[in-house]
Amino acid sequence: MSSIRRQSIISSVVIYIGFAVGMLNVYFFTKENLFSADQYGLTQVFIAISAMMQAIATLGMPSFIFKFYPYYSHHLADRKNDILSLSLVVSLAGFLLVAVGGWLFKDLVIKKYNTNAPQLVDYYFWIFPMGFGLTVFTILEAYTQSIKKPVVTNFLREVQWRLWTTLLILLFVFHIVGDFGAFIKLYVLGYPVAALSLFIYLGVKGKLHFTFSLSKVTRRFSKKIVSFCLFVYSGMLVFTLSGVFDTMVIASVLPDGLTQAAIFTLAQTMTSIIQAPQRGIVAASIAHLSEAWKNKDMKALQIIYQRSSINLLLFAAGIFMLIALNYTEAVYTFGLKPEYASGFTVFIFMGITKVIDLGTGLNAQIIGTSNYWRFELTSGIILLVIMLPTTYILAKQYGIIGPAIATLISTSIYNTVRLLFLYIKFRLQPFRVASLYTVLAAAACYAICYFAFHSLHGFRGLFIRSIAFILLYGGAAVYFSLSPDIQPLWRTVKKRLGIR
Image 1 (cartoon, helix red, strand yellow):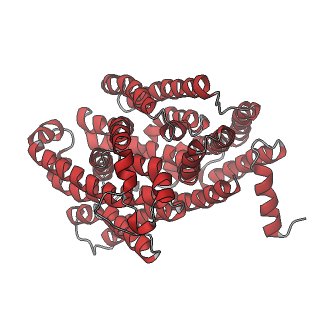
Image 2 (image 1 turned 60 degrees about the horizontal axis):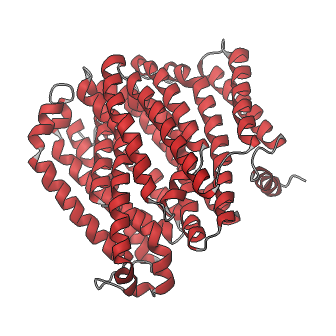
Image 3 (image 1 turned 180 degrees about the horizontal axis):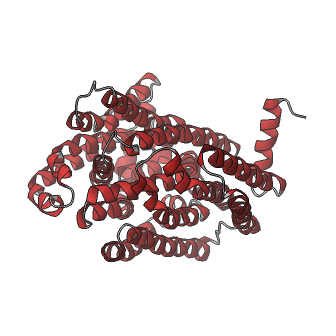
């Protein structure tokens, strides 16, 4: 666990640096007199659609790498290991099919988005370079995480990509990039640049090996690989669609769709800050989960499951309450367009969703790396069957709040099903008594800070509320040792600071 803890902490720090850069970008996108709301909304719809392209094009290859890399590395020398070559070839073929499909169905997209999101139609074909870069990067990312180098991939995805956007915003602000048309055409190159950077890193480290002859491992496991990829691919499509469907529906069905998508996306961006630690812990844990299943080490699985749950719950509950304390005040204090304050209710529903999702630990990764990976598809279908119709219906009825409610309902059911499956099948469960104490501590600290400082406004109010909450919540976590990893981490911090 020390290796997972160390890499998780480093990855989480990198991810939060990325989010700090991302929040700077959001500030520029949403501030008065720089970008219009529909321009910001367009960038977010581009991200949603390119994510869907990647999910379709990769054909389950990232999960194939995560699941089978231990077998390839155990039985093959690096230069004969064909897992990366095979994954890239299959994914590039998949993206070619996506590109052809995008060209054939262009008229359908125009019909669906032309009324409420006309700018999406204007720049339609520029989505494809973005989707291509994300596809290649996702394959290289899975491979790099499997060789236990998650910090690098987190830096490129979370920091470098956002720094690229920051650079373009500055060039736009200082009129070096003359108009928004030029901006969006450069914006889509962020993922191709990240993919190229990771490609160069693997080459410099001597980890980039290509072979186009099928290895003995591929031939031996071919039927199992094909079966696995077919099921997991369907599950990944379900998962990705569930993550981007709300933004696509909002842009499509609501009047002034891109502006509404921008308001919704700001709230969604705030909730993605809650989710940041999950990315670090998943990246650090996935290889260890694969090895634990390979070695049939149920004790290790239970330890990873419980610790991931309490650590993620600690982060999620704390960050959710901290942002909720300051959300509306921050919109006015930082001079954002006033309409963005209307996303607060969306943030509350989506924030609770993230707390539930993170608090249930790495159940998706545990199932996905086990021999019961087919259940990921089953649970994903349950999610999709609930989410798609409720998102569309509630968006029509309640506007941007509707998709947030739909996500909370469907995600809660989705995680409950997976929790029950892991407990019934393997007697694995993520919760401890400390899980309840963590939720109570977060709620109590929120209530104290809200009622004590709700009359304070501006930067003074933001600062005092935030510091008070962090000290109270952090103090409670350390004092009550809510996570087994807190005391070792606290001792390390004290040692580095020279505190006895």
